[in-house]
Image 1 (tube, rainbow, N blue to C red):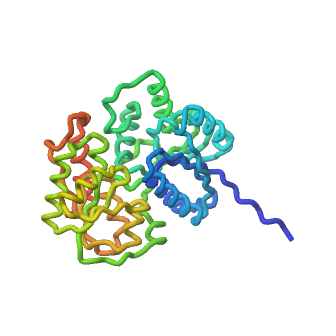
Image 2: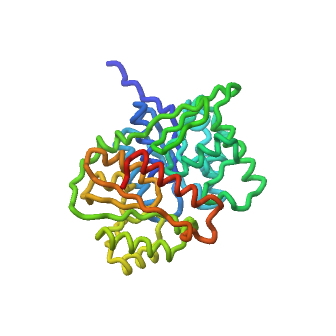
Image 3: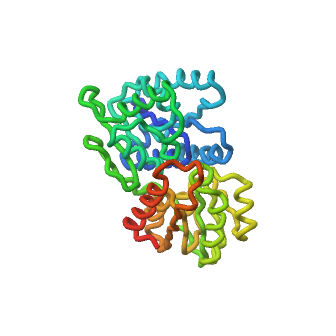
Amino acid sequence: MAKKRKQRRDTLALVESPAQLLNVIEWAHHHDALKQTRLAVLPPREATTRLQLESMADLAREAGLAVSWYEPRRSAAAMVAVAWELFPRLAKAHRLVVGDPFSRFVQAVLPLADVREVAVVDDGTATISFIAQLTRGDRLARWHLAAAGRDVVVDLLSDHARAFFTPSVRDARGVEVFTAMPVQAPEGTRQSANTFAWTRSRFGPPAVTDTVDVVGTSLVESGVVDADHYLAGVRAVSQRFGAGRYFAHRRENDAKLASIASATGLAIVRPDLPLELAVRRGPVSRLMVSYPSTVMHTLPLVLADTGIDLAVADVPSEWLGGGAPAGAGDFLTTVTSTARQRHGLV
């Protein structure tokens, strides 16, 4: 009897958040590459994110991906050890899939990768910044940290990363962006649409209740929006629509959520999976209201077969915190307006 041929894992994916991991599964499903993809999970220290990553890792294994868990953030020595452990896989991979092109650890190991193809999967609104910076030839920096201080090492890593993600005839490397965001990839970069086909086939459709949910954001935690203004806004939205639940972003802290619950009476829900999967499992309300965030672009795709209405609330300029970067208001307005135009949001 002939031996069963062992499946080659010639694609290596590096992810640091639950949303990135979900979008690697979506990318692999889109390209029929679930069995060819090896996933390296590089978790942060934050507990809620780690729990969601563990749940997502189980789903990835069920889908057919090979999953390995690393701990590069325990110490400087651990970071070096993980980079050394990943080196053989980076050297042998034909394709590299990256969830966060702004990650310093990812940027540090890119020189070890001699791949013919690289794909950047969706990381939410960060993808909008990434494409804009890549198109302009800027150094890569998260949009809400653009004004932060820099150093020589950071600049070198950023410059190399920008070159790595830029199509080059000399390097003969193909570059793909897999996204649900309203972007246009630079010339020479392939762009594939993330329609959340795997998510819709794996979960739901959900049961719909005659209630209203508010979707939380991490704009306060990232220093973009003032906490008191955000609390007042959530209170106003919950009163206007008679909302009952508040879906917390994984980065929202317990003290802030306790204040929201006390001021509004909303029941706080901390999903154990990214919101895109949580709402597909249901039950979900007939109306979901959110401030500017990634979900305004993903939930219309995820819930396309449910009849659920989605509404988006604006962030007035006076809400911006003292540490908000220049252009933060314009960026949030762009996120909101494009969601309304693309998906007909309320």
